[in-house]
Image (cartoon, rainbow, N blue to C red; front, top):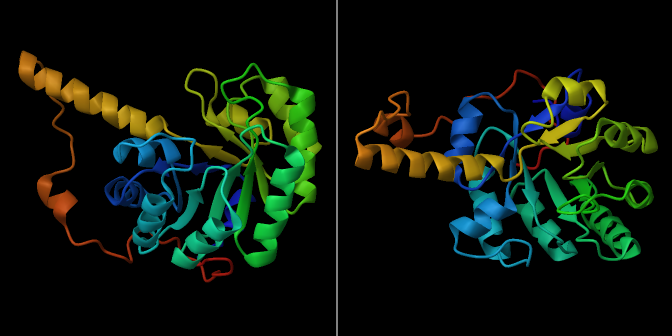
Length: 259
């Protein structure tokens, strides 16, 4: 199986769906995705907790253990994270982590990256900066931060919320490691992001929020006598014993896979 880092070096970017439970992960593996990430919002909301306050470490670790049994690379959103959390999810079978700076001191985040890479050298560290996340965006500060994180040993940098092509191109030109962006419906396409040099495209909480919207829409359709989609997974399909061999790409490369 091609190792996780190599998925960032193919002709097309790695499109990384983000999951919140085993069922969503299995469906995406069956759809042919070789790698999955977790969504911290999805995990938090599904457990009645808030995102962004490091409240879901236990739930995330339990989910990582379950996801690691699937035939896909798993990278885990550990929010701001810690060395202990990174070590724990790696031991549970994750091949990577996403760690956000939450606009705290960049030097502290760089130090965390160095510590994680020292403790778990094979773990793929995606260093996220929140300079554009729910903010207007500061390109100069973003460039400073991603360069610092790359120098600290990050394997990729993640700038969620960035939308303008010129900004994205500047990010790609600034570092020699893969740049990850969050897919923004109506603002991005995979084709345009590929042309800009983006190497990883995450869906973030998009799939979780879409699932919530679809659930409400379906319930309203039942109540109001409207048409309900019939092209849904059947009970038997969802309840089937998982085939752990299904979905693996055909390759002998195994380097970097923890699970």
